[in-house]
Image (cartoon, rainbow, N blue to C red):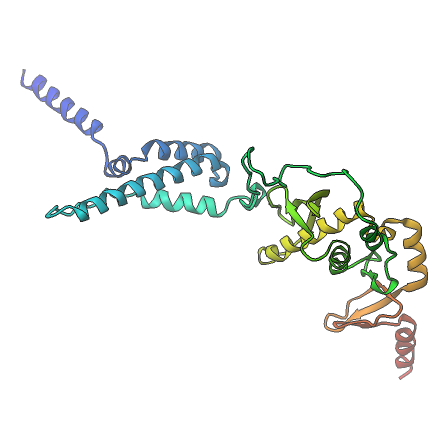
Length: 314
């Protein structure tokens, strides 16, 4: 009889121990974010990567913010109440909060830079250039503007990249637009969010002139390190401007294969150069009237070969 009573007491104590909530769970429940915490843990358990749990991280972050703001509001109310005893806010889950913040900070930038254009109200009198095609092909621009846009480009303005691609610097496009429409008479309006991939930045822009949509193009620019992303964003905008200007006929010669071949034959040359520090050699294209710039210097294989031959005699 005694053994049976003792066994029942042990079972009762064991059941109470099993039902007791541990200290960590108590802290989680006290934050008011237990549901979000549970979803976040489940996601991480399944995927083993915080970055794959963006939805759960955002939900947890939003809930944390709501709880924190409610705590601040209660603290402010308590502080203004006369002779009210000070109340300590419930303890927060510091570890979960840090994990969520870390996941957000390491979020893949292909989701964008959170710089989407402002979407205007449907009844707004201002044109929403993020979506509108207002004024597209309604009428031709003035004769003076057309002459400035379609004028042949100056051959001295054309540059040659080391890989042989000919191009017009983006500042030249801006000067042509300023001459045609006047400063402030044109602009680039973003039509989407900036997308950052592992190696490049891209964004869609609309060229607007005199209150009319002219063209839409997507710019792109490569970068080599995260520190170069701001510069790449600016380069992406300039690239979109250059592409939009095709529809206005600006520098259209540079898209004509015959013009490009003729220009290369008359104004460009291919030379051997040597890096002054690494001594690596390669061929590059350049204008005939340009000079080789540091860190490269001209390399002549024939003279180098004769020098080696003369040295071998001694």
